[in-house]
Amino acid sequence: MEQPTQPITTPLTKGIVISLILIVLGLITYFLDMSDNKAMQWVGYIIFIIAIIWSVNIYGKQIGYNATFGNYFSHGFKITALVTLIMIVFTFLFIYLFPDVKEKGMEAARKGMVEKKMTEEQINQAMGFTQKFFMVFVIGAILVFYLFFGAVASLIGAGITKKNPVQFNDGR
Image (cartoon, rainbow, N blue to C red; front, side):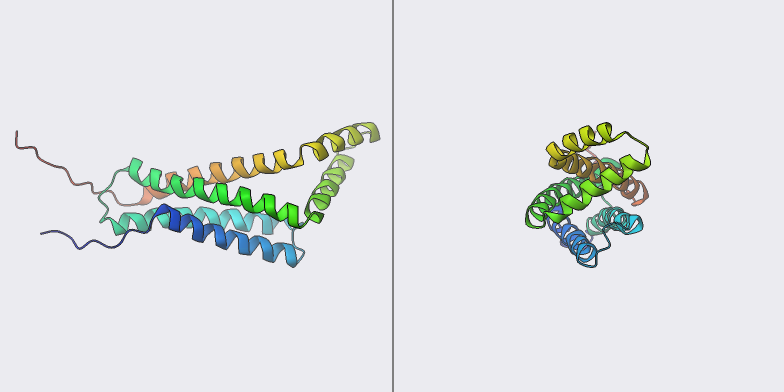
């Protein structure tokens, strides 16, 4: 007797929903002027991690847990890749539309260099370099953080989701 199957929510759908949640959180953080709050910055990553784990678990339930660790991990990482891509595009557009974000980032970088007791010459040289490659640094940070945390969340999700793959007997 076959188990009734549920419609499977695709990684595309889950990725878009998770991205929209993170974008709304980012906009709230920006418009409430909470961008400097370190704890608030981590809230987005925590939501992202929980969402990926939850997505893998839901996928397992939708397919009757008929998958392997690799299948579950793959599902989670597809969502991760999509969210990462969407967040890069959003961040690029956001910085273009709100250039003060870049200015605040540059000022925070300067403040950090002053706290590290760097000389004015070192600070000016580093600021010039940072100004020139600002978007590269931002996109690189998004890639590293989202892909790393997404891979970890996919591993956790795949590890904790029940696995009961159907074994086919070929009659030999």
